[in-house]
Length: 243
Length: 204
Ligand SMILES: [Fe+2]
Ligand SMILES: [Fe+2]
Image 1: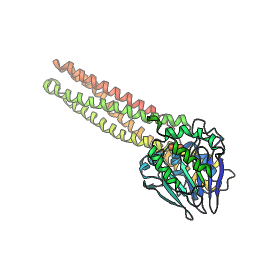
Image 2: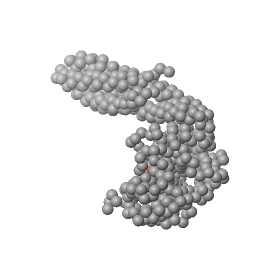
Image 3: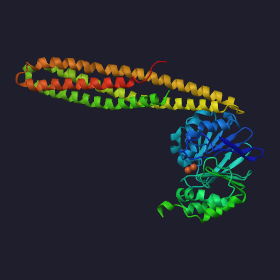
Image 4: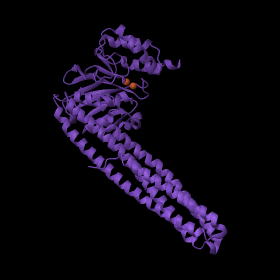
């Protein structure tokens, strides 16, 4: 599992991904960690196949008892099917996810972990020294879906938005936006269902100060590429399966 | 535990439910046959005097079988849950063990030890309750064979009694026949349940 620091301040953001032992027939995912002095948030901790390499990688940064918070942007298996295993491995953790998905996500196993339901309007995740904002991104693609925004690090973790289907071992950052577009087009047109939801999301995200947009698949957008993405996405018709 | 073994445990537990529902049907048939026999014996009067207590007894056996099967069914459902739990906990333990191996050299590798220990305890606990549940179920299956065996003996007696029943001979013999068949079916199904459970390793 590759580990890359994407923010280094009084706390850290780390991305885990490009696991070389991942079976070929499952989609590659990026897992994110926000590490503060004594707490740790795992964002979209991943599928059940990824649990062992993921936790092993996390142990480079934090002990299990300081992995206090998990966040699932939505209910998909590549996001959170590992929950049943985290549930047995972490002695004191909470899962923050949509209230709407609670009864579904619990199918993955959630006995010792406390499920903290997020209302449709979003909320915050408190990690002691810092507070992260939970931003609504409904229907993007999941019907109850959230992003994480860190106003201090200026990072938006955008879930499946900005995702790209990449060859394994692709670099962590977008280095040529125009070339990158083709790896995103089908994903966004087919998985994103609603042009209206897309417009609402773009409008809300344009109000945020973002240095890094970090999706759950593919590469991370930095600097001007964030706005390039928003402009490209704005012009892209989505929901094509029924047009 | 290896995957094939777990798989065959799931199949074993699931197949018990199927066998048992057939046993239940047959037990109900016996109960019906007993009611039928009672009516015939009543009409036959003196000629079938010896047959009347037998029909009551057959009815008792059928009821007993139905009760036992009901209890076994409930138990089989619990066993299914325990199979799922055991499978999950074994899988969890294996995965956490893998974490410990993969985390070698990581700054916080030691912190996984406690989780591994606890997962191991939970796994063993699941195994223990699974195994003791299988043992109990085997006992219950043994128990349900008793009325079936008794029913076969009674069916043999019924044939003798039926032979004294003059013009009712044929109908009473048919009753004895169907009780005997039903008891045979129950015996075979329960036997299949027991051998299905034999894939479970009960040693510690
Ligand atoms: Fe998704
Ligand atoms: Fe995804």
